[in-house]
Image (tube, rainbow, N blue to C red; front, side, top):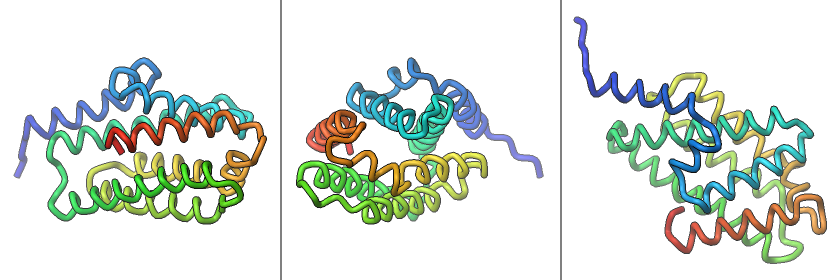
Length: 186
């Protein structure tokens, strides 16, 4: 039996169109200034760490595409009750990532790359469970790409290195994360 749903088609079209528009101007149109600033700093860290502008852009685009697709799925009420529970767990884990990142930044000599990497990996696993039935394997690959990049213990060690090359980036990232937490946007 062939079923057609204009809502399903509209959602698929939105996901497809928005995933192709993952540019800086599109990000600024879809997210607030604080989040945009954090993404800019994450890009700079990626570019500095990898030495590759293309790799940093790919990670950034993948992050944006996944965020946009999640937003579309949520707006179109595509998550079941169980998946909404997973979404809440994911949001809590994301808050934990932010608070841990800030804590490691604010309290000298507390940074542990393995702890941070494990929290990010747990966050990735929750997200993959959440979108399992909704996104393509290509999108799952994007999620893995983003999280494996930012949970890399060596990248994290470079980011948190006192007086390291990314100390000003870390300051800006943590300032932005603090603002998102204070405004209850994260």
